[in-house]
Amino acid sequence: MLEIADVHVYLGKSHILQGVNLEVGKTLVSLIGRNGMGKTSLCKTIMGLFPVAEGSIRYRGIEIAGKKPYEIARLGLGYVPQGRRIFPSLTVDEHLRLTDRREAAGGVWTIERVYELFPGLAERKQNLGANLSGGEQQMLAIGRVLAANPSMLILDEPTEGIAPALIETLIQVFHHIVSEQIGILMIEQNLHVATSLADSVSIMVNGRILMQMESERLLRDEDAKNQLLGVSSA
Image (cartoon, rainbow, N blue to C red; front, side):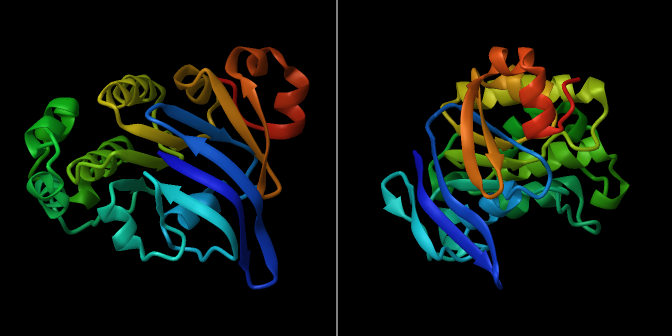
């Protein structure tokens, strides 16, 4: 579904993506790495927020490098950015109605289905975004994108700042989303989450995908975790 080939990106004189190659199908792909390695920059590049200097990004066979963010979103790519970006003055229900595109997209995700997936949001549908907990805001950020009926999600640090009990709930939610034939590219610092959801993980170092490693092997390899990642394994 998503094919990234030899992508280079510069911000000023900084060469932040240095020949990234990655493919994502109707599965979940975990991308991990230390802070500052270019993971969030890759998300923003895919979504058209950073310009591609060289290389190709194709989504469902369509070249999207150079397209505007709203054009990319309309093709079916949903983005949940790091930090959630919830509108503090809108209610939960208003957030979902803002992105509801079931009729336009011909999809199956309705606002009611989002509430079924996240019952806690249904109980707080009239609450303002500013009055939600961090976990509730993350559920809303994911639900808001699902209401637009995407065929792929890009999730940037979806468990950051989330209580451990809710992390396990989100893992089950992501499994459910993939079972609906929605691909996921997930940037994740929590090694437990990354390896629980994907059979193998891609490791980003200095603006490029350095290697792909089986999840079980990575969990056993203390040297790789210490030298390449510096991420939590719990």
